[in-house]
Length: 288
Image (cartoon, rainbow, N blue to C red; front, side):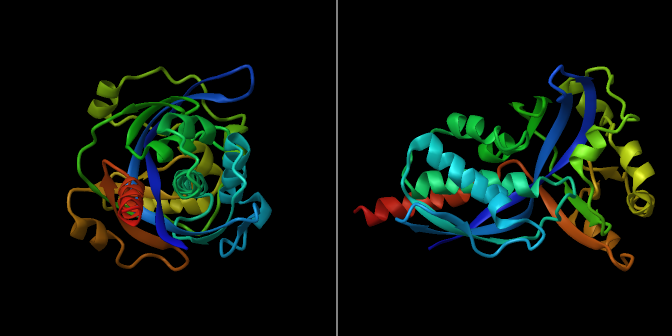
């Protein structure tokens, strides 16, 4: 058993919808901030060739869990005959806009590529991951990044060191619902990394979500009393940045009933990269 592979969450520091393609997908601009709020995955590899999920979210059918889909995709792509049982400990809220499912899929690809010895390079793993979701490549690469296209065109970006107060207000929001909403603005003018760093940008999905989900609006208003509140992705989690950990923690005192709060640190590099390095170092020691 190979334990404690982290799958970190992300925050979209801004999200602008700049167009819609003929295939129905949306053209976006965003800044992905990796944070230290993580799910944790254990992998028990086996020779029977079967991929199964052990523990995981009861709200997700095990056969449709992105970790299972990711493992089977890696098997088909590489021709591996190995199998695995995947156990997931969830901390990232489902359908909260923090990329939990995509991150779990990315960690599965990275971990099993190493444990199965399938030998794919990062670029190939990221391309493979894009078949599972637009956010998967940023988690495979493990760096905070500027994203364009449907979110798959990534440019490394240096972001200021900050702490975040993150609130999940007890509701789940469907990404498909928001991107299909007729009231969603789809013609925001394109910006640049420099422009974002100067102005902070905005989230075009925010007015759609807060109008349809009053509890998200309530969370935005509540957090806005303490800092610059913003929604991540298509919601429902909201966040505000702070310079110190104690500032972020202080905000979450007295959180309304039914909400869940986390203090998260912004990271330049994903803890998944360090876990992979540790696995590779241990393997080198085992080989003598």
